[in-house]
Image (cartoon, rainbow, N blue to C red; front, side, top):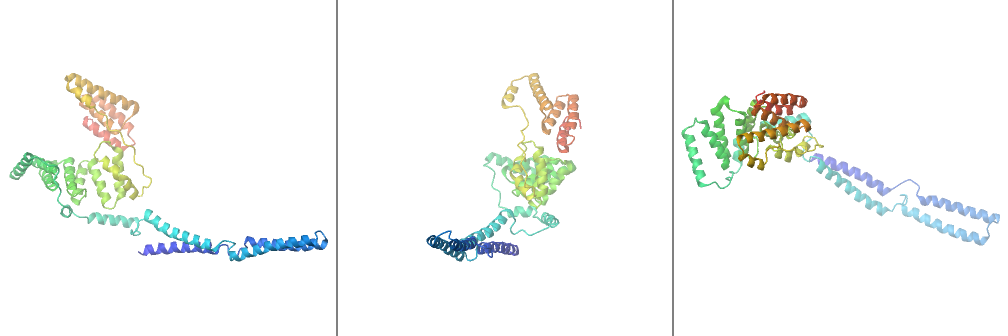
Length: 409
């Protein structure tokens, strides 16, 4: 409230100064009619001199003096009407002052409302970071957030036979609590039914049973179910699952997306923007996290102070066999099918050699040659890729994953 009072007073003072200038006009300055009045009086004197010298007769002198006298009266009336404001109409000046004053005050407040942050205190960067950390550390737990939300509606209308099978699965898992496969199936089926709380509880049991053998995918699945159970909120428990996944697989894109989401929720749009921008540029274009990032990143960029951010163009999805290719492959012999695959890989290789491509396409090509039993060609392309992407460590990491699938890393 104090801030609004201060800017309101400042806007009023500025408007008052402008209004005073408009109302008073050019006070103290000589109006144009005053100059005309001096000229007319000098003309009267000249008429008297011309009459005395005989240049004009008495009749012409009287007629000229009458005309000059009329002009003098007009100029004198103009001076009085101007009221020492240089001839500016007082009513017009007052009306203009009121209009400009209101426009200045209203415009200033409206501009701040549009570009400023009403109600936001003036905080230093360090203070904002500290408050964001406090917000992060004191945010609700998974259980607290789930308790605040209404029960999730069922997903679709499952068949009675399917529900019967799920119920049998629940009973089987309860009777054999040490079978990890049963909990994996239970987590998947509970999620399909929309029972995300039961699903993440089953996935937590999967992690407990697997122990040190749990993969990054297992931890990400757990975080995903936790977040689904809270309608998109990243709880401390979900954050721990994501950090466990990143400890095993630092480049895991799903975990990085959710970490960015958590940063946005806890007052660190700067970190969220950097994380999401990197993911957006890494691709691939058909990855499930690309669409939600594109829908939110411009707002996050503005909150992070990057007002000139421009969304990168949609990257083309990785090329693959068309529906017609898949249909034709069903009628081929194994030798013909292998030849078709080789042809597609060769086309991709030629395009990357002549036109270049995305890191994902390089990774796919290296992995394809590894699967086809041509490690020499895969190694040659991997060597070339290291030169192409040597100044882009994130892109190189993507290509390295393809080299790993080919057995080169």
